[in-house]
Amino acid sequence: MALKAMIHRVQFQIADMDRHYYADHTLTVARHPSETDERMMVRLLAFALHADDSLAFGRGVSTDDEPDLWQKNLTGDIDLWIQLGQPDEKAIRRACGRAGRVILYTYSGHGATIWWEQIAGKCATLDNLAVVDIAPASVQALASLATKSMTLSCTVQDGAVRLTSPEASVEIELAVRKHPRTPR
Image (tube, rainbow, N blue to C red; front, side, top):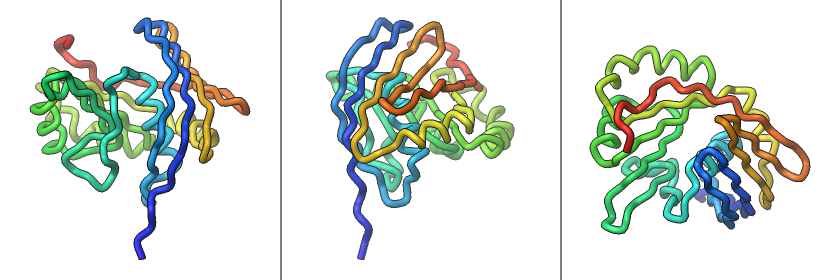
Protein backbone atom coordinates (compact mmCIF):
# COMPACT_ATOMS: atom_id res chain seq x y z
CA MET A 1 0.00 0.00 0.00
CA ALA A 2 1.41 3.39 -1.02
CA LEU A 3 2.00 5.99 1.62
CA LYS A 4 0.06 9.22 1.27
CA ALA A 5 1.41 12.74 1.48
CA MET A 6 1.22 14.46 4.84
CA ILE A 7 -0.72 17.73 4.70
CA HIS A 8 0.61 20.79 6.53
CA ARG A 9 -1.36 24.00 6.98
CA VAL A 10 0.67 27.20 7.12
CA GLN A 11 -0.34 30.75 8.04
CA PHE A 12 2.56 32.76 6.63
CA GLN A 13 3.16 36.46 7.22
CA ILE A 14 5.87 37.86 4.96
CA ALA A 15 7.56 41.23 5.34
CA ASP A 16 10.25 41.57 2.67
CA MET A 17 11.56 45.09 3.06
CA ASP A 18 14.18 44.55 0.35
CA ARG A 19 11.44 43.92 -2.27
CA HIS A 20 8.74 46.03 -0.57
CA TYR A 21 6.49 42.98 -0.40
CA TYR A 22 4.14 42.63 2.58
CA ALA A 23 1.45 39.96 2.60
CA ASP A 24 -0.22 37.15 4.48
CA HIS A 25 -0.51 33.76 2.80
CA THR A 26 -2.54 30.72 3.81
CA LEU A 27 -0.82 27.66 2.37
CA THR A 28 -1.59 23.98 2.21
CA VAL A 29 1.64 22.06 1.73
CA ALA A 30 1.68 18.39 0.81
CA ARG A 31 4.81 16.65 2.08
CA HIS A 32 5.66 13.60 -0.03
CA PRO A 33 6.41 10.47 2.07
CA SER A 34 10.05 10.56 0.93
CA GLU A 35 10.44 14.27 1.74
CA THR A 36 12.10 15.30 5.01
CA ASP A 37 11.06 18.13 7.32
CA GLU A 38 14.27 19.90 6.26
CA ARG A 39 13.35 19.87 2.58
CA MET A 40 9.75 20.90 3.22
CA MET A 41 10.89 23.85 5.33
CA VAL A 42 13.41 24.88 2.65
CA ARG A 43 10.48 24.92 0.19
CA LEU A 44 8.61 27.21 2.57
CA LEU A 45 11.67 29.44 2.93
CA ALA A 46 12.00 29.66 -0.87
CA PHE A 47 8.32 30.58 -1.06
CA ALA A 48 8.86 33.38 1.47
CA LEU A 49 11.94 34.72 -0.33
CA HIS A 50 10.06 34.97 -3.65
CA ALA A 51 6.49 35.36 -2.43
CA ASP A 52 4.02 36.62 -4.97
CA ASP A 53 0.34 35.99 -5.63
CA SER A 54 1.28 33.98 -8.74
CA LEU A 55 4.02 31.87 -7.10
CA ALA A 56 2.88 28.25 -6.81
CA PHE A 57 4.23 24.93 -5.58
CA GLY A 58 5.02 22.29 -8.20
CA ARG A 59 3.58 18.78 -8.05
CA GLY A 60 6.40 17.51 -5.86
CA VAL A 61 9.58 15.48 -5.62
CA SER A 62 8.28 12.68 -7.83
CA THR A 63 7.72 14.98 -10.84
CA ASP A 64 10.77 15.65 -13.05
CA ASP A 65 9.23 18.18 -15.43
CA GLU A 66 8.15 20.70 -12.78
CA PRO A 67 10.16 22.69 -10.27
CA ASP A 68 9.53 22.85 -6.54
CA LEU A 69 8.04 26.34 -7.03
CA TRP A 70 7.27 28.37 -10.09
CA GLN A 71 5.74 31.60 -11.21
CA LYS A 72 4.00 31.90 -14.55
CA ASN A 73 2.84 35.07 -16.25
CA LEU A 74 -0.61 35.63 -17.76
CA THR A 75 0.41 34.05 -21.08
CA GLY A 76 1.56 30.86 -19.34
CA ASP A 77 5.27 31.49 -19.80
CA ILE A 78 7.43 30.57 -16.81
CA ASP A 79 8.99 33.70 -15.30
CA LEU A 80 10.61 31.98 -12.31
CA TRP A 81 11.68 28.36 -11.75
CA ILE A 82 12.84 27.45 -8.23
CA GLN A 83 14.47 24.07 -7.66
CA LEU A 84 15.87 22.57 -4.45
CA GLY A 85 18.79 20.19 -4.13
CA GLN A 86 21.47 19.23 -6.61
CA PRO A 87 20.04 18.61 -10.08
CA ASP A 88 22.26 17.40 -12.90
CA GLU A 89 23.49 19.67 -15.66
CA LYS A 90 20.87 18.46 -18.14
CA ALA A 91 18.00 19.34 -15.78
CA ILE A 92 19.54 22.77 -15.06
CA ARG A 93 19.93 23.55 -18.76
CA ARG A 94 16.36 22.41 -19.47
CA ALA A 95 15.05 24.69 -16.70
CA CYS A 96 17.11 27.64 -17.96
CA GLY A 97 15.68 27.12 -21.43
CA ARG A 98 12.10 27.05 -20.17
CA ALA A 99 12.13 29.93 -17.66
CA GLY A 100 13.14 33.57 -17.55
CA ARG A 101 14.93 33.08 -14.20
CA VAL A 102 16.08 29.89 -12.50
CA ILE A 103 17.10 29.75 -8.84
CA LEU A 104 18.62 26.65 -7.29
CA TYR A 105 18.68 26.33 -3.51
CA THR A 106 21.17 23.82 -2.13
CA TYR A 107 21.06 22.83 1.52
CA SER A 108 23.18 19.74 2.18
CA GLY A 109 26.41 21.33 3.39
CA HIS A 110 29.60 19.68 2.19
CA GLY A 111 27.72 17.54 -0.36
CA ALA A 112 26.40 20.71 -2.01
CA THR A 113 29.91 22.18 -2.08
CA ILE A 114 31.28 19.11 -3.87
CA TRP A 115 28.32 19.11 -6.30
CA TRP A 116 28.90 22.79 -7.12
CA GLU A 117 32.64 22.30 -7.65
CA GLN A 118 31.84 19.61 -10.22
CA ILE A 119 29.11 21.51 -12.06
CA ALA A 120 30.05 25.22 -11.73
CA GLY A 121 32.11 25.38 -14.93
CA LYS A 122 29.35 23.72 -16.93
CA CYS A 123 26.80 26.27 -15.66
CA ALA A 124 28.94 29.39 -16.10
CA THR A 125 27.28 30.34 -19.41
CA LEU A 126 23.72 30.08 -18.07
CA ASP A 127 22.96 33.78 -17.70
CA ASN A 128 19.54 33.35 -16.07
CA LEU A 129 20.75 30.93 -13.36
CA ALA A 130 21.31 31.79 -9.69
CA VAL A 131 22.56 29.27 -7.13
CA VAL A 132 22.10 29.92 -3.40
CA ASP A 133 23.32 27.70 -0.56
CA ILE A 134 21.52 27.53 2.77
CA ALA A 135 23.80 26.72 5.71
CA PRO A 136 23.18 23.29 7.30
CA ALA A 137 22.68 24.84 10.75
CA SER A 138 19.93 27.06 9.33
CA VAL A 139 18.25 24.06 7.69
CA GLN A 140 18.31 22.07 10.94
CA ALA A 141 16.87 25.02 12.84
CA LEU A 142 14.14 25.41 10.20
CA ALA A 143 13.22 21.73 10.53
CA SER A 144 12.64 22.23 14.25
CA LEU A 145 9.79 24.63 13.37
CA ALA A 146 7.90 22.00 11.32
CA THR A 147 4.49 20.95 12.62
CA LYS A 148 1.22 19.93 10.95
CA SER A 149 -0.21 23.38 11.58
CA MET A 150 2.25 26.29 11.46
CA THR A 151 2.05 30.00 12.06
CA LEU A 152 5.19 31.54 10.61
CA SER A 153 6.49 34.96 9.81
CA CYS A 154 9.43 35.80 7.58
CA THR A 155 11.27 39.08 7.70
CA VAL A 156 13.81 40.08 5.06
CA GLN A 157 15.78 43.27 5.57
CA ASP A 158 19.11 44.28 4.04
CA GLY A 159 19.70 40.70 2.91
CA ALA A 160 19.16 39.26 6.40
CA VAL A 161 16.43 36.63 6.65
CA ARG A 162 14.61 35.58 9.83
CA LEU A 163 11.86 32.97 10.07
CA THR A 164 9.82 33.02 13.26
CA SER A 165 7.18 30.80 14.83
CA PRO A 166 5.44 31.40 18.18
CA GLU A 167 8.00 29.05 19.77
CA ALA A 168 11.30 30.00 18.11
CA SER A 169 13.15 32.31 15.76
CA VAL A 170 15.69 31.23 13.15
CA GLU A 171 18.26 33.44 11.48
CA ILE A 172 18.87 32.06 7.97
CA GLU A 173 22.40 32.02 6.61
CA LEU A 174 22.48 32.22 2.80
CA ALA A 175 25.52 32.16 0.51
CA VAL A 176 25.19 33.01 -3.17
CA ARG A 177 27.29 30.62 -5.28
CA LYS A 178 26.26 32.10 -8.65
CA HIS A 179 24.55 35.35 -9.56
CA PRO A 180 22.55 35.63 -12.78
CA ARG A 181 24.34 37.71 -15.40
CA THR A 182 21.34 39.55 -16.77
CA PRO A 183 18.55 41.00 -14.64
CA ARG A 184 15.10 39.76 -15.61
